[in-house]
Length: 183
Image (tube, rainbow, N blue to C red; front, side):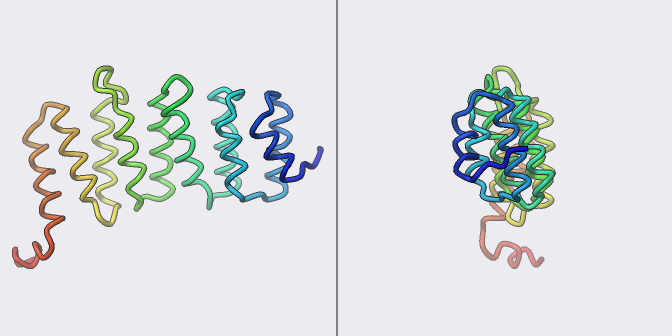
């Protein structure tokens, strides 16, 4: 197998339209333990790759370098959110994988909510609500997740749950509130 220099890898990832060449450059990067994230960003945004090919490279990269998994999954999610026919279901899938890689980070939960299309109910509102509720259990400061849940429940036609999460957000954002309630 040909060994590529870092500059050749960047060039290939950014501009090649030949899958075999891209694959060889990717294998070379993995074999050389290239953990600089910039070349892989070029790879993920290469418009010559299909959604399945982008997923193949992303999954392999996350498997080979687990310390990059969170960032890789966030990139994949953002790519599927704005390209590949606005594939929101794949975007949410990768936001969920990012949340599994780093459950305490609020971004995957909040960004997944931005994928919601109310006209098409994509991704399904109920599954999105469950995903964000799961995040509330892990994120250190869930105020923004509470606010997002309030909004999602309003969209779902459940104003009582919406008000419940709005109150939780207000209570969590009020300094000293726990002391006042004697907790």
